[in-house]
Amino acid sequence: MGHFASLKYFFKKNKWYYFWGIFWLILVDLAQLLVPEVLRRFTDQLQAKTLTTRDIYLYGIYILLIGFAIFLFRFLWRIFIMGASRRLEYELRNKLFSHLLKLSTNYYTHHKTGDLMAHATNDINAVRMALGMGIVMLTDATFITVVAITMMARTTDYRLTLLALLPLPVLALAIGRFGKVIHKRFKDVQEAFASMTDTVQENFSGIRVVKSFVQEEEEISKFDAKNENLFEKNMKLVKLYGLFHPFIQYVSALSFIIVIGYGGMLVIYGDISLGDFIAFNSYLSLLVWPIMAVGWLINVMQRGTASMARLNKIFDEAPEITEADAPIKLDYFQGNIEFQQISFKYPNSSVNALEDFSVKISAGKSLGVIGKTGSGKTTIATLLLRLYDVDTGQILLDGKPIKNLELEDLRRNIGYVDQDSFLFSTTLAENIAFGVDSFQQWEVERVAKMAEVHDNIMSFPEQYKTFVGERGVTLSGGQKQRTSIARAIMKNPQVLILDDSLSAVDTDTEERILNNLKTEMKGKTSIIIAHRISTIKECDEIIVLENGQIIEQGTHDALLQNQKSYYELYQKQLLEDKIANEE
Ligand SMILES: Nc1ncnc2c1ncn2[C@@H]1O[C@H](COP(=O)(O)OP(=O)(O)OP(=O)(O)O)[C@@H](O)[C@H]1O
Image (tube, rainbow, N blue to C red; front, side, top):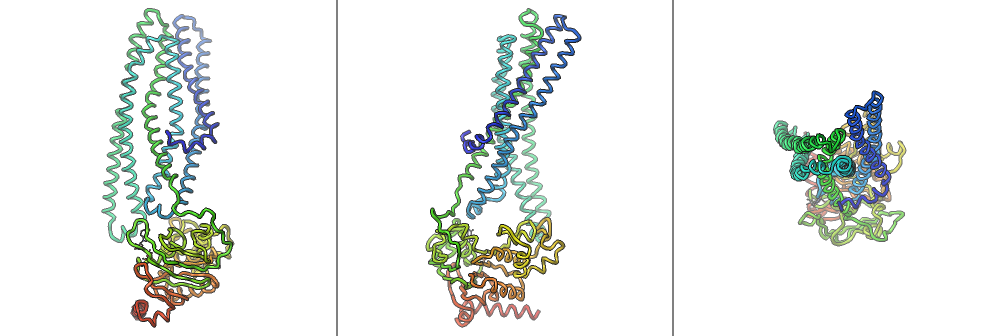
């Protein structure tokens, strides 16, 4: 239960909802407990032959009024308690999402999206159930049990009450055991379900791979196996539930046998009236449901607590990348960048992605980065954006270590075009304006023209209002890259990083984009990462990376004169272009 302590603030804020919910709930219970009393009087009058037609109408009206009160009060407690638990779900989900977004990138390399989704759905649902229906059951079961047993003992006969309650310990034990097994089987079902969902999710996102490798049938049979496993786990649970309910009813029926036997004798000997006997049975029927609820309650509370513990673990997770205690606010970035003897290894890797890496880029200049795959090119961008912190050395921006700058400031001033060119499922205009708070249509069009994607966009049926992804158009790799470039320029950044962002664009378009960027980035700093020499040849300085180290550095012409790896790469690419043009 201690795990719910983190929700103290919520209970404090919503205490009146819970108060009124429990108030109406207790009124429902009281109304239900009135029914045996009405039956008792009715039967006693019937037996004493004092019942008139008017009385029959009156009793009918009583029952009707009680029924109506139960109907009304049930509605009220549901609104208050279920309302509070839905509000809790809403707040927890918001809190979880914003917390997860604030965690560092590294967190996402350790946690699967499927697991995070499960926390956001199953765990939050389990907490909602525990603090909604769980609280209802707890209050209801306790109140009804205490009042019904007291009424049975006080208004009828304490000996009969004690005897009638004899099967209860057996029931409690059985429920405890069933509860444990149900819990385990329920967990098995959940796991089987998660595994099946993973398969579905992977197949849908990797549909192109599945089709191109003609793996539909294999994937269908893999899915079938997982689905069958889920079915079997569900059937095990169904069987257990099937046994659980009739068993509880059967054992509680023993109470009725005792009441019929012993209670009947008491009526014959005149110790209790027939009305008492009827009322007693009616109280006993009211007791069956709280007993059944105990098993459910234990299960719901256990699951809720376990889920809350899992959520608390996420909430306790602190972002690895933090700001300095008194971060420096730079109102204006010039864009002087200096990497000083950087060595860096990704947390789950054993080799350095960058090693003793030093480079200086003056404001207004451009740096071209080229090198084999895995040589550490993207890592340069990752470190400058502080998605990870360096292990040794430091990165300076305008002479200040980036660790001392305001994180938001730093990232806001860097326009990063990532390698995947990830776009959101919203309109093209909104995708381009992703990094700004408000925008004018002409601004979006201006940057789209600069990224040479405007004409493509205008050819779509809804132009800038066209949706990207499932609900709209599927963009080609090159269109995605150019849209991402437009998105980065839209921020009007002081530093622009293109990470292999022109690889899916033909060389003519590439040249036009680079020319446009030259004008746009006048006085600003650019880092252009590429595999093709044509992309970086105009840069003021070029570095060639290998295994995280700079092996060559200089301008395009100087590097050609060096006649080393840059020159070899250039020759190779020239040859490739020649062959391609001849074809
Ligand atoms: N998140 C990560 N966790 C662990 N290792 C990583 C991670 N990202 C990259 N690496 C490793 O760091 C090294 C440098 O990777 P990086 O992405 O910087 O290379 P790159 O030159 O940009 O490659 P490419 O041209 O293929 O994009 C590689 O060995 C890579 O496997």
